[in-house]
Image 1: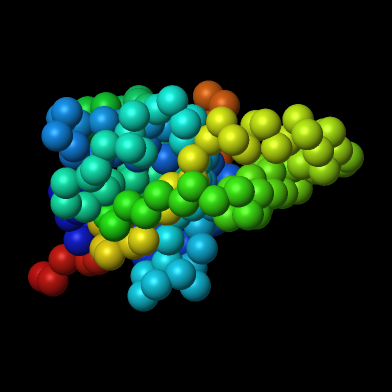
Image 2: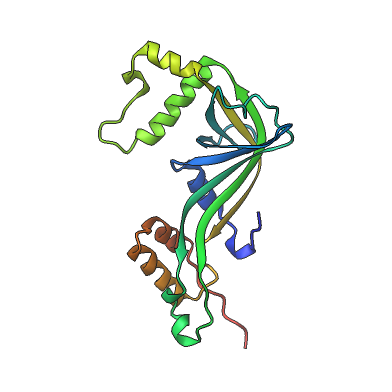
Length: 213
């Protein structure tokens, strides 16, 4: 991942990205070429030296049964949105502005481990369900469904774990713009229905360094 120094994600931003409910594109190189699957995950910071991403695939998905060559890659995407140059104060000053895209993303590399164990899978789906149902007034639980039905569903999936070896993370959120431009970006994002990206911009906002005379 290309990460200019001023767009490097902070440890706090990375932790927020990995712990918020979401999904990742799991990409592996196999003898059949590149395989990829979008799957929801749970981040376990205590696994291994750098944590792990836990998820599951359909048993019929060949990605789990095709041995991965080298590291697996999980692409985790945060909120993102188009940024119009019309939002910049700089547009009225000199006009030297162009559109861009604001986003947060992490490339998580690691060793892919397959878990074909009912107990591991049962724990994983309960973790995943609990994470995504937490915001509901009456959260659904795995045990709300019939036991035999859940047992059948578990037989249809296989667990996967990316034991993390390294992470490259980027938060491109207008940090390179003057403060007046950032004000315009925040207002524009909120006005166009992207409050989550606007909040991310506010979180990383920092004053531009002044030039020496």
